[in-house]
Image 1: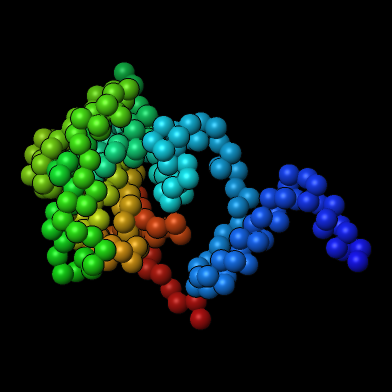
Image 2: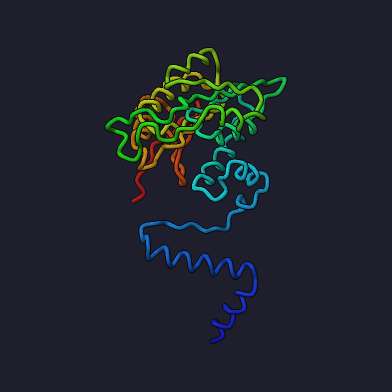
Length: 256
């Protein structure tokens, strides 16, 4: 009886009501989707005003990508002093390129260009290794919409075409930070092939699709390309992965 009274009293506070709602959500979720793994919602970055304004700009605060966006934002800090340009392969509405361009602004002493590579006609035709989640022309978004979204990001180069053809526009560049988000095997492999040898020491490559069961081809492409390299992709719990150029990575060891 006393515990019940304490719980009822807790519901009078905002924190208590939030805990109750989460407990209810968790119980319902276990019934509807028992394989799903909930996480604790007590995360400081959810309340980061600067980051939330960015999410709101692209209508993503209530979407499924917020955790991966935060990871990219934090990873840009590792490249802050690394010389070179930045790039994104597969831009969709421009949210990733906006984040990277703003977080890694060039300076007089360390100028940067941000390259955007996209067909602006959606995905190419998936191959057999890409599974069944995607269809040709999925994720199409107009180039003018991206241009408008990135209008406040300095020195952006929109490079239109099917990967790898538009990479010719960045042939002579070195890179500090590259975000690959093309979902399929072939353009992922072509992106790794182009950018890996052009990364500055300490530069970051992020593959947004790495480790997703909906993007088996992208994961396979990264692992194939890195098979004879000292680096490995570090898989992230919210999906995606990253490597640091020049930072040798050990193989995952069995835990049991």
